[in-house]
Length: 492
Image 1 (tube, rainbow, N blue to C red):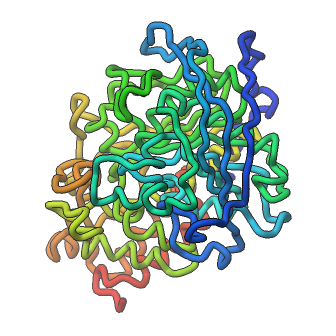
Image 2 (tube, rainbow, N blue to C red; image 1 turned 135 degrees about the vertical axis):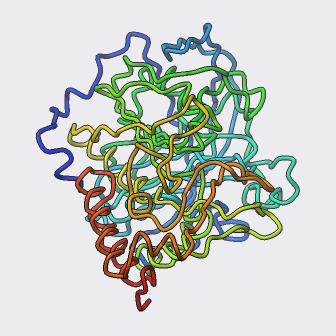
């Protein structure tokens, strides 16, 4: 869908395939059971809460089981050129959640295989929530993998423990067995193997042509390690989309969900598989991804988004209910004027209004970009980097918004200061950034009337589309939201 940004930059698709790796790993096909319909009859996962059938999708859940392998690593280096060897084995049984187009003709052949995030100690499809609108528009299938143990058995947080699988529905999920996170890498591989080898069951007869690995936040830490150590050897994934990783990566001993290799871990340059990293201000400064920055290359792109935070108002409040047709763009726009401080009162209560930046629109463009890269060999546009002062602060403009990086209308026709920093409160509030609406005087100085604002906003949107970082399909909603607003004295 991003045409202008890729003009003249096509590579032949076969060139994306690296040479065979001598020590390739043969990943076994796990047993597949399902679709699962027992217990309360409801799939337990934090993702979407609208009716998927209303957008032409269906959902199903399957159990996969077999024998998983853990890995022992040689000393780990910052360049990501890691070597691991098989270590112990253990039986496991976990689940995968599948969202797929009902009409086979609408399936585009790509499957996004998401390592479900358990930072909140429950299974969450963080990237699906942020970027599902584009996945549905393009007819992709989505497979969420319960790769880590805490998603099954729960953790120490009593507020969310009831949503862990075996607490939420002990009848449905009581038979699941996870031997520990040191086995998560192979469990994830076997889930991908099931998609490829048993597509008639897992995808309901759809024929997958490309698999893209995706995982956000803690899952991104694991995928960084997976890409550096296993991706070339398993050859299960045609590309990687890694949103919101930190400066390190996970270890292989499974000692703790947040046990990360400290330092500045880069994606290995000889991977030979397309990798697109999507980065927010919070990731750079708070999670120290600034220490792991690396140059774009033939198989690597890093998109840094100005005015963005690790998680934000869209992902927390709008994403779960956004079916792409319900006018959420206009409602989301309004949160820059009347921002949200407590998206889940009593559970997530932040001290300041949380970030209402345009990350979701760039995340959707990233989904389209990695798909185009994998399918057609057309690399994503190279993005300018955010300008930093040291490695923990950003250079900002006169309105307090970060300089450089990927620009959206939210920062180039601003009505608020949007940051990935400066937040505190309960839960993960420190990663949710801030929104500071402009006062009436500042708005008047920028936009003497509504038409002036709409003109500036639309011009910024057009620039983002031309650059390849906002999709044309989203531009109409963004421009309609501005037109409906009262900024500059609009009629609303």
